[in-house]
Length: 304
Image 1 (tube, rainbow, N blue to C red):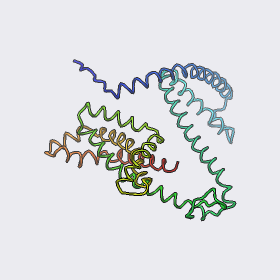
Image 2 (cartoon, helix red, strand yellow; image 1 turned 135 degrees about the vertical axis):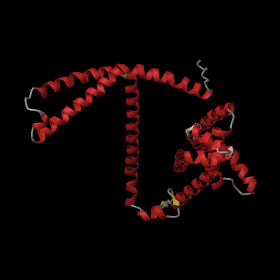
Image 3 (tube, rainbow, N blue to C red; image 1 turned 60 degrees about the vertical axis):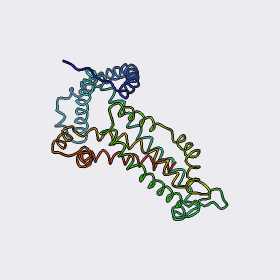
Image 4 (cartoon, rainbow, N blue to C red; image 1 turned 30 degrees about the horizontal axis):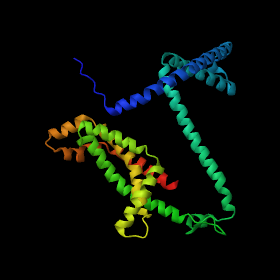
């Protein structure tokens, strides 16, 4: 007897968004892939006939010509397998092609960004020394003469990021443990969706909320002349980083095999002891990855 499958709100939302996108990509890419496969088959057939016209096997051809012939034969064999797989499994080929294009494009974009940043920054060192830039204590780019000391900016970014890590990491891991292990099913699903929605908040919106709400609160709480201090920035950065930590750490905790929990509970441990001594150590690599991604989000926001 088959049990009914329960679809959670998160799964329903993901399928509602992803299915039309995949259908559109398949409809858009399949004719192009089939045409490309046909052209490649014709070209490879012509090249293959040209190679087979020689009576000497490619392995026995000396020098660079033999090396080139062997390379062409290996490429032909690889292309035949790729084309056969493309024709048999077009959906997998579409997904793999899309992932490969996105990965290559991200690397190209990062390289281009670094190139243009370095290209535009190098002329500065014709007029200012490297030590005065990285160890200077004053940042007045519009003064006369201008001063480009990065030390206050670097120290401030480090302090704000450290404060955000102190606030976000323990809170995020605790929230992930609650969502994955302690919360009821309905509460878990809605909290997971809520966390992912918060992760999608733009940085400008979070900064505006901090400026309007958190800054006056910090000012009144500590009786300061202004609330625009490092603590305020750390709180807002922790808010930005926490959804990433919670989401990825919760997935890592849920990925721990059920046998670990059942075996620990069968030995007489409590639920909290199982979480502390069994589940968290087993999910340590995923939790560390979540923390690193959260810290990366915080550092990225301080640099912009």
